[in-house]
Image (cartoon, rainbow over all chains, first blue to last red):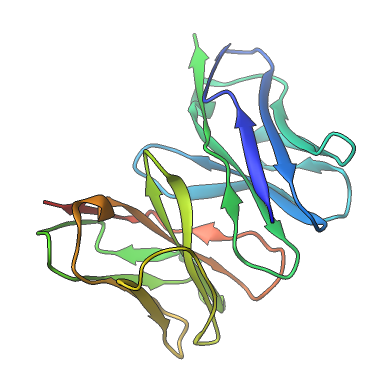
Length: 113
Length: 113
């Protein structure tokens, strides 16, 4: 069975500061891991995905995430926050061979001017 | 390239009624999944279709059903609506079975009164 835990339902950072959103997963088989972003009244947009290739994954809008098997983590980072990054971010896991995603509860990112 | 299109965007129904939501995936995408998003339960998997066959089903009552047509368009139906069915219903598509990451539509906001 798979599960995802996102630590911190709300995170605030200053514009220009480092963004770090935490995601820990549990999976009995090698996982596929994803980060999605959701802006108000919109669907989810794929930021990046880990599918057992490189452990450091670069995504859109300057975001990246590192897969750490020993820590069962897939934290999302961005070196410098921008006001437009304010949104809700979801981590998701799926087991290889299935198409059911298990989503975390989401982290709402607030960027302070 | 057109994205995932969901219709209608907003819907208000009365308890006991039934509702049908529509999803047109990205052209060429054959896998379609449906998710329910609520403030209390977050994002929950409903079902996934590939080549007109339901491949996975989430833990929802039989009132929730879906289907996929030969052109990959999908519909989901909820019968005997309950107040708790009020949610954002998201459709997502992927090229085929595999770790491609889903592309989500903007969703249908269903309100049951």
